[in-house]
Length: 178
Image (cartoon, rainbow, N blue to C red; front, side, top):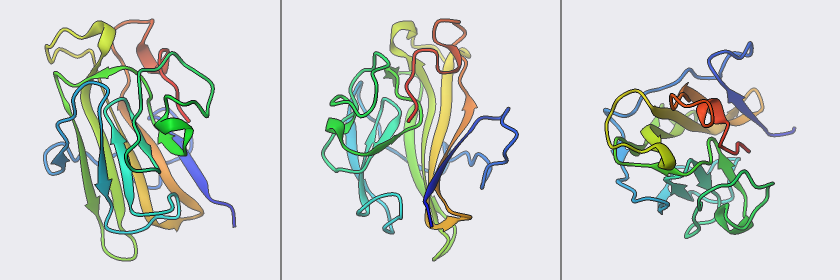
């Protein structure tokens, strides 16, 4: 059957396969610099990707091809060379995010064959608004990638907070999702 990706916000009528799982206290911190990405190996090969190693980017996405990056965004159409070199990826909230107040984490939860690989962007500021203070103008969201599709769903995006306290940037106004 077809593989599906769910994008869910707290206001969506469709329930998420799993709810938002906060891994900021238990996950592996990636300590990414501005606009940086790092290769991470999932403990399984997911239907969503061709291999277990993915590129996790500070700017809000996971790329299928290791060694690629996610540059700053100007809401370009997809695919775009600035998004993992034009290769496949999951862009939960592609924006110019800044890490001074938060971090990006990854963790696998569950048991074989029903594990979920989670990447969480926690308390990141929008670069143009960055003030270095944890004061409510940060975003938190995650991508969950399933070892085995759940009802045909291979991955989903979940959003805990997309409010930068600035209408020009709130709720994805300056981001690309795809």
